[in-house]
Image (tube, rainbow, N blue to C red; front, side, top):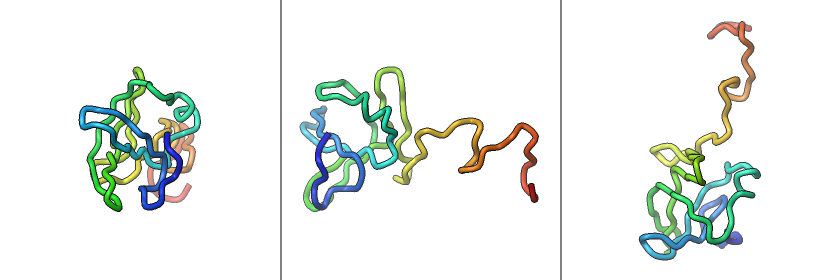
Length: 106
């Protein structure tokens, strides 16, 4: 992991050595602390994304990150950040009870 660099995309930037050589991979700012703790220098991870240039430096904007058996969707197909730790019991930011109605006043 690297310290913030002036002109770099916001969020967590990893310095990686991959098939395209040494490259910064931007994971964004929605990665939870538990997942950040599992990242370590020399660790093998799989990343899918798209390379873009920011201030003359190429960054891989990560869409999907795989750590061991866990795959996290980091960004949607259009580059918008994805909510990484969503659970089935919530919709948006409001918990839903088992008797919640769809639509209308509650």
